[in-house]
Image 1 (cartoon, rainbow, N blue to C red):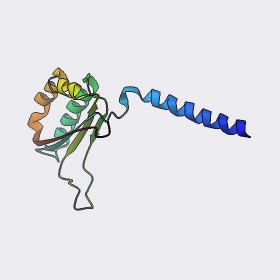
Image 2: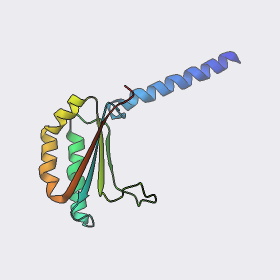
Image 3: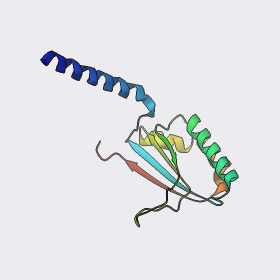
Length: 133
């Protein structure tokens, strides 16, 4: 019985380790978190939303520096502390502050800004570094 328990624990541990290895570069990296909130000029325009999403997805696909790539929209807030006024949220992580700085001047990032800046009226950025490191 003891050997069976050890075998089960070993199997679970190695499977979990394999899953973590498979995550690779897509795994959440807490070293530098870059949260960007966009308010589109015409948030009800499906054409504007499509153009914005296309430009944003191209950026995330081609960037050499981003790790976690998340695009979201605001759900209807049910609590007073939740701000649901933004149109899109972009969350990306970087392995370091230096990688985030390189991203800021990366051609694909600058191209995204040029392609999409006419679509938004406001952008707010929140950056955070890992406190637990």
